[in-house]
Length: 267
View: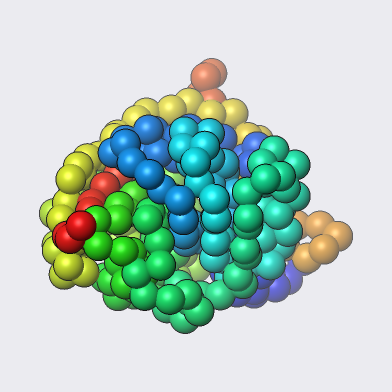
């Protein structure tokens, strides 16, 4: 089957239905990010690249005093899942969803007590500018929490993609979009923010190749180009390569997560 190229938002819309199960490790990482925010009265929260809403849900569980959450995501399919999830669990919270790009958010300057962005920054082409745009929306004294892909992991996955003949935009994506501690700290300072805590987690996992492929289809549908009724040649090549590379305990790979918590100066 020929590969159908889609945009990143359309790809995430395709994967929205199975996304939460496929990225459960990301959800756990998001929970750790929220638990690392300083205690405070966060009445208004902006969730950038909000996806299906698990970061906002984590915020609401830790800070029940939140009155308003605004979720911004370029994928309308993700926003539909967000609305259903938060509406069911947190019916008293005012939720506003905006299908917008991070660089064109229609929200006011200084409108939010907290901004969170979990596992989305690496998809933004202009990361330094995106962090500055998020900082723009914070009130003085407000807090931002970011979780993204850290530099130095996923070598085994990158090598597998090369062997499977994945296109260069995909295989070159990692070096271009991963961030390290010094890079994101520089971004925070450039945005006028005061870093409070910046750290990296590196983990080694063994995952069944079918589970790893399900994750790939959820987060990389725009590269796989699967048609509605089947799988592209590239998808099938990667699936075969995962099974060939897997050992008795599954496909082994390293993964880095980068966390950053910062405050906007002022009272």
